[in-house]
Length: 272
Image 1 (cartoon, rainbow, N blue to C red):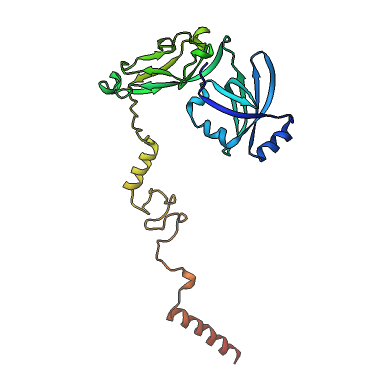
Image 2: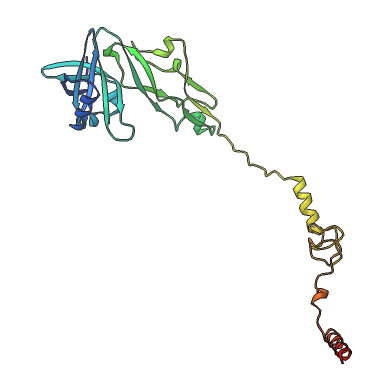
């Protein structure tokens, strides 16, 4: 059985959230190893070394060699828990691998021929990757690192399904075994966005046209009070004097002054 990565781990006896929190403060990653007709064992690994190995895509889809003390166990990665916002691995799960026992693994898809595809190069279509990985089942010795998808012969409006993939001998797609033949990639015509035509309110347009035609302040014009005299200010009460006329109470002049003097003289003559 060929392995691609070797990990060094240690057994740990303390369990629980508190124990796992203390391990993380020490730069360790809590882990568990299960399956393979044996009891589960709790482990711990160095965070820095593990993080470097996990930067490689192959780490997630190949057989790993897990060394604990003087024992070596073939295993595969089954689950990883990461911190919500920190670059930290919180917990990791491994499953033992036996040569005569089939395993189920998520394998990445590698697409090739996208720029040379007929539907893209000659017909102006757009290539879409519907999915980037698939789940397969096989014996450990047959586990592929990836599945290649050739889209160079794909024309516009054509689709590649799971059943169209070329699988290695002894490797089956889990979804096909369950009767689900889902799409993997397709080429479709580019979408043309329609220009939005502004909606014109007919009532507002008619009111604006009428307001432009009427002279400001004229009778019947927008804002003029009903019954207002010609030349009156907009909004003036009916019967108001034309704009610019002075109020009668404020009138001053020689006539008014003389009237006052005449009243005073007559009053004085009567007393004498």
